[in-house]
Every structure is written in structure tokens, then in C-alpha cells.
Image (tube, rainbow, N blue to C red; front, side, top):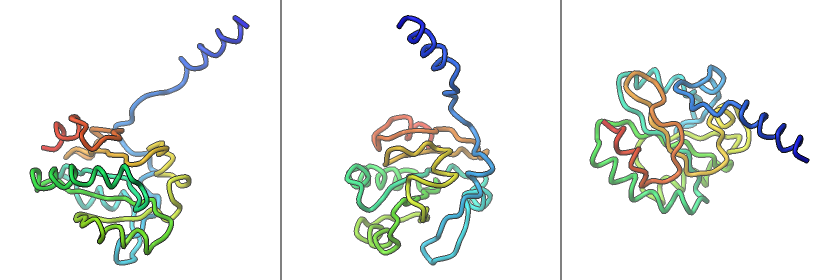
Length: 161
């Protein structure tokens, strides 16, 4: 039994728990759908907004915690109007996604991962096991905040400059 515990501890210590500061090539090239139906990638977005701070929220129209966080996110949008707010939905139903944007009055850049939250290179890279999930990409294009699950996380606001 002691050997099993020791082996388990060694295995866990050898696992990579690093927080990435840049997206993998596969994650950046995973296809997303824009509200107008066009296809794009995270790489396209990061190139388009290079030099800007980018706030990313992974969400879904059916996610109660996402909906509870929207008022806080809207207040951040008002306070930091120079930050690009990107909402990436994991709704598998296109109409639920678009209706969710309207129903909750979300403004910003809107995209959808059509494979949902359990499949895809971007989902795998961010280890998306829970939503909402918030990320911040700094003006240099590096991931400044890799994982936050609370809209009131003070680290979010500290990085929105």
C-alpha cells in the first residue's frame, strides 16, 4: 500500500501543471463560427486585436453561473471600454447561442465553438471542464490570466489596462 501511495505521489509531482502564457498552434487554429455565420479562428482574432488587451469568456446560454456573471462583466465593459471583450459560446445549438446573446444583452465579439465544450483543440488547450471561464490576453498577445471561473475575481480587473 505504501508503495502505491509513493508511486501516486511521484506521478502527480511529475505532471505538468504549468500555466501556459501562449496558445498552442492547434488551439489557435480550431475553427469558430462568428455571429454572421463566417468561420474564423482564435489566431485571426489575436492578430486582429494585437496591441489590445483581450478579455475572453467561455460561456453557454444554458449556464446559470455564466448568466449570474453577466452584470459584473457588463460593468467591466463600461469601465474598460478600450478592452476587447470576446464571448466564445460552447452552445451546440446555433439558435440557442444567438438567442442567448440577445436575451442577455451581451455586446462585444461573439463566436461559437460548434463542437461544444467537450471536443476540440481550443477546448482541450484551456482544459475547459467548467464554465464560465475567463481569460485575459495582454497587449503583447500573451496569456496574462489563464483560468478564472468567477466574474468577481479581482485578478480579472487588475489585468484590464
